[in-house]
Length: 71
Length: 353
Image 1 (cartoon, rainbow over the protein chains, first blue to last red):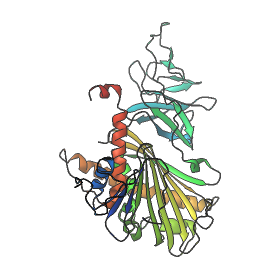
Image 2: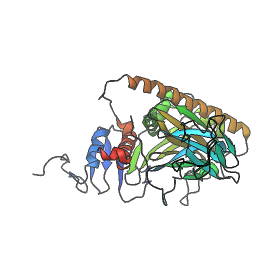
Image 3: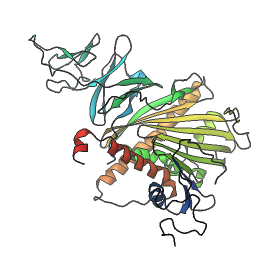
Image 4: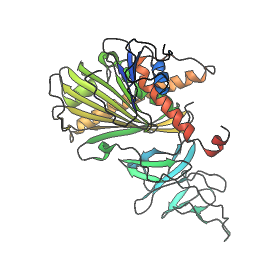
């Protein structure tokens, strides 16, 4: 998370996308708490707007793609 | 094209533009006549006489008290749109009535509701700085020969400042600094933050604030789809204390840049722009400088977007674009606009969906 950017919007269903400092990656955070990193903003929105498909609070530590089936 | 979003408030004019002269504006393809009654109330009516469709905003149409007299054959209408007089006969056809539009005067704008239902309690989003004694405002309006979606795209990604507006508001740091994007899908609000800790001060801010050295520059975009764009701009010398917990921020200069984005036709847009500042409130030279400088910046966008629209017009259907990180906010806006347009399609369009 970027400490410079505390949440500005306070609604209950806010999506947040942080450009991870020093990288080209985007960290997408769904209003359900699920997080995932992407390299393409189009993929970010496909994943966020697919909620709840592929969303688990605090993304799988194994780094599995959200679209992948759980073993 | 970017689909129109109905059942929304749109900026039709600045309050100072609407008076006892007849003003015509086309909003979402609907020709609208604007004027003020003798007691100062803004009125919005369909801008076509029911008889032969003559534009009521065009001379020799005129006001007679609060009534509009068509300049072609003299059909005369009240503020409720009802025709009260036709030439040479006493019977006035029942259908001789102009559509009326809900109007609100707020934050120095005249807003008009375009839709198929009444606005009810819905009010336009706010831009309170434009009508505040704590701020001084310069403003203008430029017609754009482009789809309003191109203006939304432009304003949601300020990294273009570095290239299109270099020497005015652009410096290298704008394009180099990562952004955070927040989206409240339900409310239709996109918020994009770009906070630059140590940046070159562009002439726009150096000359208006008097800051000589490098600056902390915050750009916080708040886009209320589809109609209003706010850029909260905070400028302070590097090392100056930040905002206080109570929200006060005495060590910084604040500029609120406001855009009313009003689609006119499919490929024309009204670009209402305003710059409100909380410093040098009575300094006319600062006002003159900011007006001229911002007008130049707006025209740089207008010229570029007009060129872009012409280029897009030659593209084959289904042409490809490429989006990168800087487009995160713009992509969010596009999705929100598409959703809102689908939810608020005109009844005839909805029927064929």
